Image 1: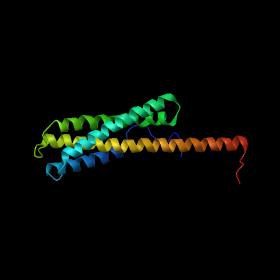
Image 2: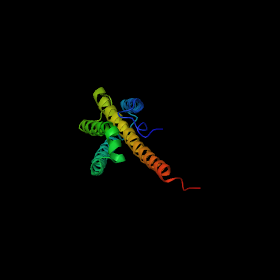
Image 3: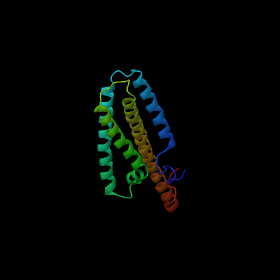
Image 4: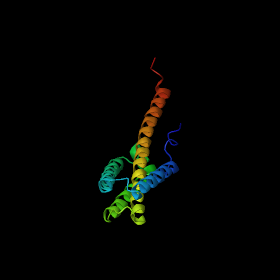
Length: 157
């Protein structure tokens, strides 16, 4: 596998579909009042969104130190989708927290489902960002090792 092809730019359709399925499940469970502590769950989702925003800012600061680093390349490829998940999570959890949690109103079900969608999307994009960083880091190390073997000969047994 080529290093440049290991991480594609943009959001994956699979992450969108998985997030949509989870959002529908959460919305249906909330509508039928099967989720008992929805307020605590939404607060946890909000906390995860803020924590991921802080983590993204730290990653951007480290990536700005060396624009040719693996982290900056992966943030360029996957950062926009990750940021969309973070902002969507924070916005929809704040909207959900500002309303009463009556499970019979469809607008509240839609906002809780949207918060669940963006939370799942944010988590999946974080995993894909870390996967990109790990694969590219090992791929670059592997190609540099191969270059050294070509230029200096293979000293291993």
